Image (cartoon, rainbow, N blue to C red; front, side, top):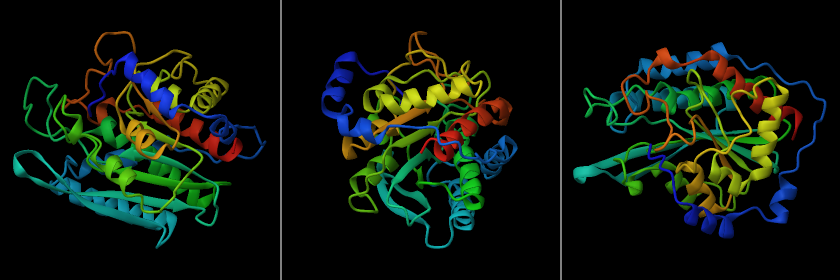
Length: 324
């Protein structure tokens, strides 16, 4: 994924046009409700990641991509119910004249509730290991970069089936996020761009959206990504406060991160839905600060940590069941 660090000038411009208004801030008010919060299973989330990797790389056009699509649809239909899980198919132009057949996958929980939030991740994997010293032209496994966000969302979907959430929750799995070559932002974020330009539900306006990207790695660190702080600071601060209260402050430090180009920027810019990015990176290292396995063949199950999955999952379940 092209998670490049943008300039401060562009950050300021985005804030002027997309910063939270007073109305947005009111929508993002939170209050502890004293409700029982269902247990998040890191073992289950881990298995969902392993299931994805068992199909092979999930880059567009591959057998793994086709099998994972079927797997996700089957899981989500079983959790959300027939009719509440559906796909959004579209075509995008690839390199060398390729035509990419892509699919966004959507599942709605508590569909009768008008008051809703949105959680999202990308399910495709990178078609080239361009940060690796070997086999750089071959696709990566994508355990953390792609797989981990999907794994957490699938575990949440399982929880939602057994414990209907007190607010409407929509899960969106974007395709084609990681297709582009480094520096070519026009061919990244294909799924979120298409979904934002062609929303399946006209006028869709959830309170907010949370993007999960690289949320399962060992020695993970989730500083406050800068665009997230521009678009929805109240939401960021609430999640990081929950992390501290739940004993995960070492993973979610009160520290400014980098400004990272990701699906959340697309959603904010096109639809104006306050969207933040929970993403593992280490700021102030020069460059982008991602883990050494990023965009390499080492992004496999060996680098997935159940403790990281547990932290992210428990913070989200606390938010959804006890703060909404």
